[in-house]
Amino acid sequence: MTRTRVLAVAAIATAAVSTGAIATAGDRQTARSATTVKVSGKEFSFTLSRKSAPHGRITFAFTNKGTLKHDFKIDGKATRVLNKGKSQTITVRLSKGTHKYLCTVDAHAAAGMKGTFRAT
Image (cartoon, rainbow, N blue to C red):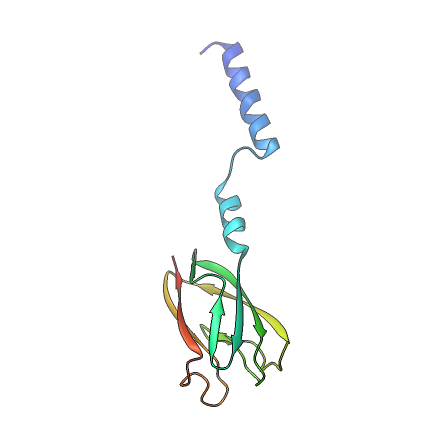
């Protein structure tokens, strides 16, 4: 390669990096860490905005839309028990695979407030 070509390739690479045209492994991790799943709970079910997400850091934004108090627990981490209309977020690091979630209040899980979330 001639000196002119080497300088041209270096200039193009520098421009691509400075303008963000090249994604790095760190960029992909940052994008992955931004996953948010909206969760609403009511008597006696949960509705999730998505049933799966890439593994890693996932934020679950829970809103109690029921009349009774509810919480949301996944992978050992839970929201507070919330009154009607209240919200809270929790962030967990999920490995690849399936993860059970549930409401821990009384017999709510047995009544249907449970499910499985998949980290891909």
